[in-house]
Image (cartoon, rainbow, N blue to C red):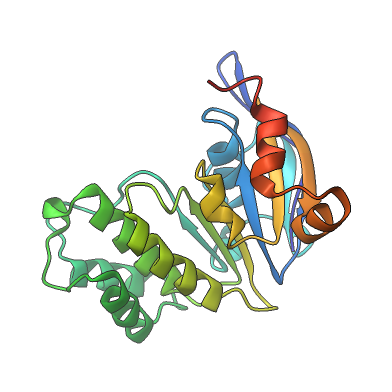
Length: 232
């Protein structure tokens, strides 16, 4: 469904993504893993059609990513992207104006789960509440691809449980979910496949159940094997 071929992005003299070839299929939840600065966010933004690659290409259903394909991709960035005058209700209306697949009913259901009310002003939200709002409005779309960049940042432990449950509800056979996070243990309960990136390069893509069965290691174990010498 979503594929990058020799995808490369350089900012000035720094290469953020370096010739990454990767194929992601529907019906799976992928964990995109790597230390800060490894290229995860840059790859996701190119896959979402938000920034252009320096070289290489991204394909959606076999065709280059375009304005048309962006209609089927729900991307949640790490940066805040709501106007400060907006209420939580305004955020929903804003998405409704832009995306045909947005469901106001689903949004209200997600808000209730997250403990948010429509009268709240975005400028008054804590970082954790803002994170919940971004997830709620992103998952309120009936997209074919969901890409969530660091969805658990700033969210307390109990709220993470609810978010995991909500995300998994939409992990159906016709959807593709890609989540990046440095909270590897949180991702272990969601993902069935993992993509490891380091210094802009693809290290490996693994089926987690196969890895557990054949190698007897978890995703967190593999993360430590790959990055243990570069972190801390």
